[in-house]
Image (cartoon, rainbow, N blue to C red; front, side, top):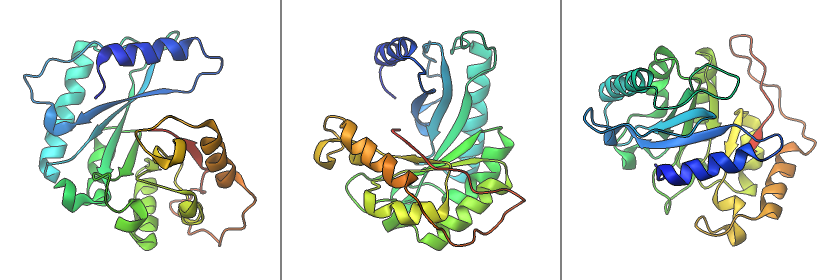
Length: 231
């Protein structure tokens, strides 16, 4: 989780931006949120709260997520969005390299995310030096994970060292959101400066004319258009 003052600066900057995108906050890992850890007072206008599952078993994820959500509700740590009263929506972040993250296989957590009222789930990579998402999970696995998320009404986001070469696979799988970081930076260095040209190339490639194979229909839902974002 970034320092609260940094999050506040980002929030203030977005407020001054015409048609500002939704603001999501990464809270780190559930394992870091012990019951006696004080909750920070976060800036307003947060649409999504994201939390990861590294280092926990499936049962531990269920218990800790429930307690953290309840603490946020009781403490009102996030001021309501201007003109709106609903609380931020939750995203459960899981890991394609789940063995390295010492966490459950992503699909084993979909029922928990659904039961706890999460809006969606993210599959990312825990390690930032090893294989990316498509090196950790096969295309068949990604299709199955997408179907399982949609059966439970969960939005699916995919991230993890994704590059332009991964776009054909991403378009076949059809997540609602694609998250990029390295691919959005100068020379593909994830700790470097953001590059508007790199982001536009990725966005354009996602939206280029494409004739996908006939999709597998799940629970009556149609594949939704992809959106490139930076997590």
